Image (tube, rainbow, N blue to C red; front, side):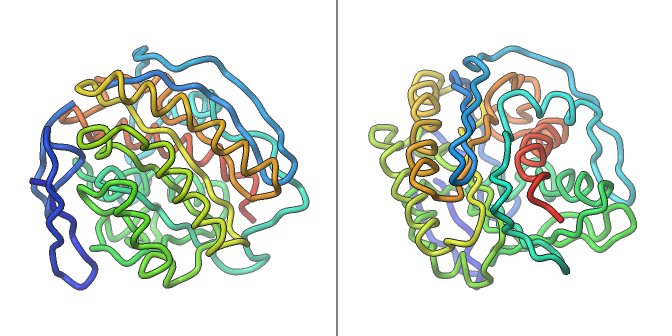
Length: 299
C-alpha cells in the first residue's frame, strides 16, 4: 500500500502493486532497478541540444562528506554531474530575481521527499549553491524535512515530494497546492511509481504534466529529469527514460523554458539504499546533476 502525506496532515491512499517509491511518514517500502537513459539537453528558446550516449547501470564510486552543519558534500558530484545534464542556457532568460533568494520547487514522489536520507538531494543542492555564493530557497506544501542548518545557514525544509504518487497524482496538485508559492525553478523527477502500477502511457502523462507546469508557471525554468534506476522494473524504466529527452526538446523548440537532466546515467545501484530510494551518496549525486543544470541561471 502506498500512501501520500498531504500538507494538511491527512493521508490519501494510493494503492499499487509491487511496492513503489512510497511511504507514509517515515515508513519505507523496499523494492528495486535500472533502465537505460538517453541524454539530451535543451535549454529555453535557444533549443541547444547535447547528447551524451545512453545510460546503463554502470557503477562509479561517490564519496560524501559533511558540508557544514548537516550538509552532505559529495566529491564526485561536480565532475560526474557534467555527464548528461545542464547545457548552454538561453542567455536572454533569467528566471531568478536580481536580489533575494531564487525559489526552487522540488516536485516528485518519495525520492523528492528524501526517503532514506533526511532532506534527500535538497541538502547537497543547498550546499552546492551556497558554497558558490548563490541565495536559494525551496518551496512546497508537504511535510517539512531535512536538517535545521547547512553550512551555518538555516536550511529551507520545504518541498513538494509526495510519497507513493504517480505522475497523474502529482499533476493533480498543479497548480494547487503545488504552485501556491510561485517558484522560479521547478525540479521534476516523476514516474517511479508509474513503473510499478501502469508504465504504459507514462511518457504521455509526463508530457501533460510538463505542459501544465509551463502554462501555470510560464516565467519559471522547468527542469525535467528521467528517473534513477529501479532494478525491479528495468525494462519499463528503459522504455520510459528513452522518451523523455524528445518530450523536453519538442517543448523547448517552441520557446518553453524547459531543460532535460539525465539522472539515470552512471547512477550505480549500490547508491540505492533500499533498491528504490537513494542513500546519502545517491542523493548527493542527484544534487550534483540538478546543480549542473541550474547553476548558470542562479544569480
